[in-house]
Image 1 (spheres, rainbow, N blue to C red):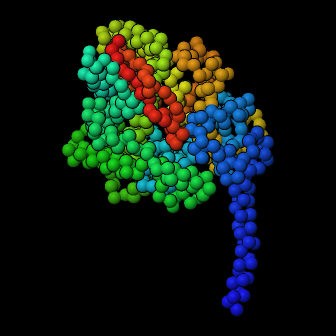
Image 2: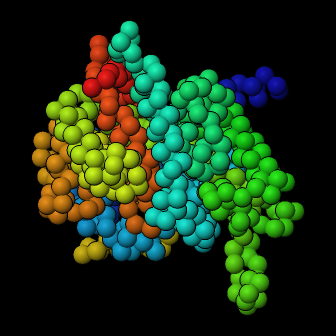
Image 3: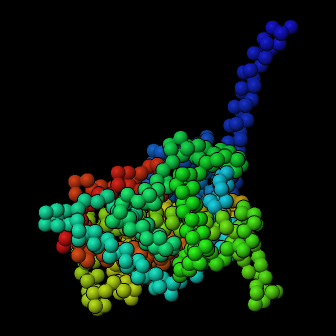
Amino acid sequence: MDMLMLISLMSSWPAILIAVVTFLYWHFTKSFDHWKKKGVVFEKPVFLFGNIKDRMLFRKAFHEFQLETYNKFKGNPFAGLFEGRRPSLMLLDPELIKCVMVRDFEHFVDRPTFRLRSPAYMRNMLINLKGHDWKQVRQIMTPAFTSGKLKQMHNLVDQCGRQMEEYFDCNITPDNPKLELEMKEFQGRFTLDVIATCAFGVESNSIKFPDSELIGMMFKFGDIPFYKRLALFAIILFIPMFARFIPLSFFNTNVMEYLQRLVQKVTLARKTGDIKRNDFLQLMMEHQDPDTSSRSDEVLKLYPSDSNPAKQIPYLRPDTVTAQAILFLIAGYETSSTLLTFACYELSVNPHIQDKLRAHVNEVLDKHDGQVTYEALQDMNYLEMVLNETLRLHPPVARVDRHCTMDYTIPNTNISIKAGDSVNVPIMGLHYDPEYYPDPYTFDPDRFTPAEKAKRSPYVFLPFGAGPRNCIGLRFAVLSTKLAMVYMIRKFKLVKNERTKFEYNKYSMLLKAKDGIHLNVERV
């Protein structure tokens, strides 16, 4: 009898296997007619991968892949993509981008996120928050980045710039006329010094002391083993509904835990020592939930105002305060150091532009008694043009995504985007489109003169996003990078060497050079 049952089971295995394979094929392809039904142009998807096979297998860097995808659909106002089995609508028309990111923002308030099993201080970062929680936390954070606040922080940023210049003075001598630096590493140290000083009152001086624990950790925040990257891709594409049960992260968990302890240590020191500073962390602490026993996995709690009991004001949960502090460290460090790195690279391979910029910087400084004041930086228009052209050629992120929160009909069409669907804006493609930027691979800061900017839509230059959900630290990043560039080139020059080259790192979602950016710094 047992033998008969075994034979019966063995004979049924092929049928079971065929049934399972058929079901899986149906499940992973059942959405592939999504764009055809809507009448949206699209590329035929591939089983399991959709339209992102080359990216999923790391054959192409994320920035290269986004540019290639944009060029496939150039000439259409929008196009349908499949990321695995998940449909996403790419927006190519600047006016449509304006509608989604600004005019009809209430339909696209959220960013699409994957709720991996992570601690509250990661889930509650501003970039991950949605709806009302996002709006309230953004409102609390905004005052930290006003012109008045930035002007008050200027002296702290300038101190970091002076430390950079002193480092060059000490290390570039007649006996050692060339100082070779890997720019991402060096500019990361400067950027971290600025953020640590301005946001947390911590003087790291990592330019002088490059072996500090903090800088060592920050260099590793994006280091994720290859197998974990593949696992993240697989979860997001194939089983996103189970993501919240899986203990994976887009960041190095050891670094995140270290930063959490650091922020909590600084916060506790301020509370117990009755220390107050006019900085980002202090602003967050002033909005911290006074009921420390409250659940930390919630973002906000409302309390009556002392002056008006009928009015409720939001307080942040402790983990939410920690989350914003860590986000400011990571986002500010990564984007600003990347911008500085590629600005230095472009100036080294375009020495005539570097000479023009140096002359401009020194001319402005002469008008301000040689001092790198806040007002002097505001007058350096050509420096801002150089940084904008760097951001055009080398945007830190290649695209931004939005999550539809209310059904939306694309203007002048009968095509609807349903709540829960996602759209994406291909920053890399827009920045390299010859329709907006002739000869797009040439580094030309004159593209950003007022006259040239007036000729094109502002929605074809989006290095920091656009609309209410743009980068909140934009003005802080511009201030610190402008100041760094002044101290980099007013007395020194950036010179390429035999190691100077740029290749995309295919394993990173953010902009990274495969082997770094190596340059020499010499006296003028």
